Length: 257
Ligand code: NAD
Ligand code: 0WE
Image (tube, rainbow, N blue to C red; front, side):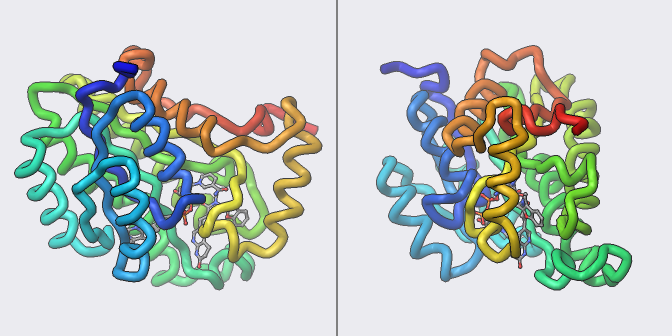
C-alpha cells in the first residue's frame, strides 16, 4: 500500500472533467501514494475539478489560465507555501481556435498561430521554470502530453501539430537545461482518447475506429494506460529517461501501411 510515489508531491495542470487525460494521470499517481494539487482554467471548470480533487483527498485547487503570468506565479507561490517544494509537474494542456482545426493549415492566421503555440507549447516552458525552482535540491520530474500529429500529417490537426512539434522539441531542450539539477522532462504521445478536447472534432469517432483496426494491438488506448506510463516516467522506474517522447498508442505510430 506504500506505493512507488509515497511522499511525492505532484502539481497537475489540465483536468477539465473525469474524462481528462490529466485526471487519469492523477488517479494513477494517487494510487501510488503521491499527494496531489490541481489547477483549473476558469470558473466553469472549478465546479468540475474541485469535487474530483476533494474525492482523492487534495486540498490544493487553484485557478490558472496559462496565458496569465500572474495566475501562474500565484499557483507556484501557494504550492511553495503549502508544501515547501515539489517533486512532479504534469502538463496536459492544449488549445487552438476551432477554425484552425477545420480550415486548411495554409489559412492559419498570426493570432491563431500565436494562441496555439502560447497555450500548447510555451506554457510548458514557463510552468517548468517555476516548478524547477520548487524542485531545487531534491530533483524532480516533468511530464507532458503530445500527439503523433507533430510527426506526421493528421488532417485537421493543423496548427496543433506544429504546436506539438514545438512542445516535443521543448521537452528535449528543457531536459538538457535541467538534467544537471536531477530534473527529468519527458512527453507521452498518446493515441486518440474521447475527451472534452476531442468532442468538438468532426470525425473523431471514425478516427478511434480506424486506429482500433490498424494499430498492432487492434484497439484504442485506455486513459489508465497513459496514467500508468506517467507513473513510470515520473517515478524511480524511469530514473534513466529524460528528453524522451514515449508513444502510448497501441503501436499505431509504427505502421507504414
Ligand atoms: P481535456 O479537454 O480534458 O484537457 C485539456 C485541458 O487544457 C483542459 O483541462 C483545459 O482547461 C486546458 N486548457 C486549455 N486552455 C487553457 C489555458 N489557457 N490555461 C490553462 N489550461 C487550459 O482534453 P485531453 O484530451 O485530456 O487533453 C490533455 C492533453 O492531452 C492535451 O495536451 C492534448 O493535446 C493531449 N492529447 C490528447 C489526446 C486525445 O485524443 N484526447 C491524444 C494525445 C494527446
Ligand atoms: O490535442 C488534441 C486536441 C487539442 C484541441 C482540441 C480542441 C477542440 C475545441 C485543441 N484545441 C481545441 N480547440 C477547440 O475549440 N488531440 C490530440 C485530440 C485531437 O484533436 C484533433 C485530432 C485529435 C486526435 C483534431 C483534428 C484531428 C485529430
